[in-house]
Length: 280
Image 1 (spheres, rainbow, N blue to C red):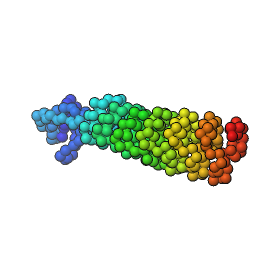
Image 2: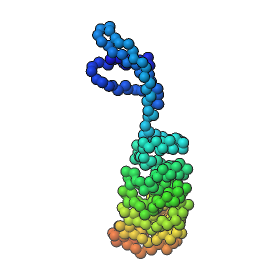
Image 3: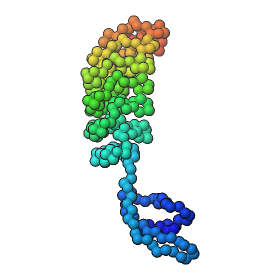
Image 4: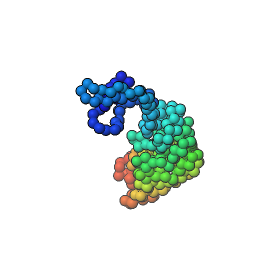
């Protein structure tokens, strides 16, 4: 049996009643004609041509993520209207389109995704939500948008960290203050070391403006983590002198003992932090 595809002839042997022709283009028209090979040089005439139309290639998750990366809203809408994929399909890194746009600060694209019911509670493989990703990158505009769609502050990733803790990493004081004013618990403790946002600041970067923002919004300076350490002790260990000064100016308790039975002053002495010792 012979099939003629445009100008290409395909020879098929055997008694099969059908075959699959590969490598056709999507959304294209093809003309097929058929003839039979009886024996040696004996062939039937070609059949009348039959028009064949291939369907549109289905969309995949990568089509959505590519359109989002290119910030092409009409393409995003076309992909989502196709019905072939869900709006929360993850990319190769396990992130949904909403997560990616949240961390990039793209509220207009987020609005489109949310109109197609993108989930604000969806989590990546590390347990992070779109809100957490937005906080890591200090994206106030996208945090505000996610909050209007029900994103919550008292949520933890697999490491036990909350959105406000991640906002501390960004050092965006406007974001931090807005979140606290919006209802985020300034003294919330993570589920790993029991750190408050102020303790995280004292551990990661010691940014004085971030610490001031937290203290100004009623952060408890003397709370202790699972090892009994206060943020003053953590700041002393990490050598963040400006932060130590700020904490002492705001009456940090210097008589508190950690689980090892040492105060912040004794820790400073053991580490030979002479400049820190002089502050007491």
